[in-house]
Image (cartoon, rainbow, N blue to C red; front, side, top):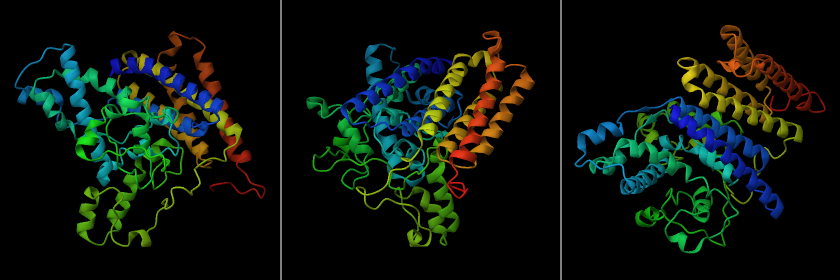
Length: 423
């Protein structure tokens, strides 16, 4: 938990710098693919996922440790060859885990957030799930357990393999020659993120593209079919916590309303997007029917709101960095209180990004939570020992944040007749 937090302290600013470079390069070329609000939402989603993982908010029914102890035929040393073998097996595991997430209704919920951006950029790589509380697919690592790959090798290789998936989320790198035959490239992954009929549910590979070629899910990017990005049931929100549970909420609702018990029980395991007969007419949901003709979400945000959202995201990154660097000192159960504050922060300012009047309630709740922490502990989880005036800075920030929220909700979001937008 602590070790992963330390890795993320290094990785987070590196990812942020690369996103900024992509933004500057795209603007220079006249091909900006990183709208600021979309970028803030993506970074915020990445924060929620990182906090969930660092706090260990997930359960594994079958651990890799247990598997290797029960079925391991050999015991490999943790040398370079073992790491290479582990890397290939983990990529095989990643391919099938990814493919199942696309093809089964219930498991799509954990992955929809990654595809929810209507752009394709480095920032959207950070849109990762917080809804995967249970890991059900450790058994796909059986090949590694059989040959005795040590658990510590798997633990180290998994985040490396994950971080290596960041670079190819970009529109600025075109086809890459011979590498297209071996590795997942930006061209391959643009296909994967596209909602064009020609591209849906293709290219599930994470590092190596040959899994898709072997198992029949490969599709080349076509010059005649420019990829259009997003999900066919658009998220229509910047709030990453909402996006994480939208599909699950629809499944629960459809299962409840289904008249046949068969539908109630099987809807979870049907192909992604399946609904009971006539539900599209009886209980319609917003769905993109013409991928070349739909309005992207949130393009009308003011500069004031955009810049304030960026400020909130940057401050949140600082708050998160302190948590990751001081997990041991903060200790249990306080790290979960800290985590709750981070989730409240992101929920509040992304609700504001959505121009929701309810953001004022979430911001007020966040304000009271932080003040309660300061009142109870006397400081911000030990930060006073580093910066004696930090209490005043935090209280000042909280008041400014609350005041800005009031300003947007009660002034900027009002239309001429005094009716609140999204009311």
